[in-house]
Length: 152
Image 1 (cartoon, helix red, strand yellow):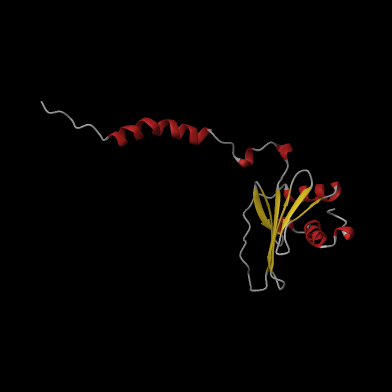
Image 2: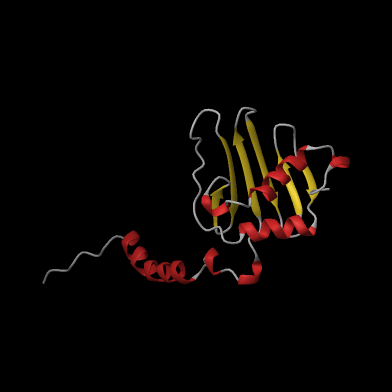
């Protein structure tokens, strides 16, 4: 009588662990889209790159109103007022797509608003008519702290 060869130890381990790992992969994490409705769109990350001035800025706005800016001039931290913060939340909440971050031409100024659910370019139709909240924040943080109106 002939005996069947046993599979190598690695193969036996794989067959023993595979069903459990598949179960954990399917059920172990919560999708960002399933976040509670009241959680809001935060943190909101705004990046500004390119343009004639050669911008390379990154702003992270927390739900508390805290704004962290990283740019060529160094890091800055300020706090947004309630009205601008709620305006930013209002425009960021419906964002679910994926923004194109590449420049359309050499002097293209690319401003992207990103949330945990997705991103959109400021020039996209999704954000049309709402640019003032974002552009005001970008301009305001660059000012002297005594002259700021949105982020102090």
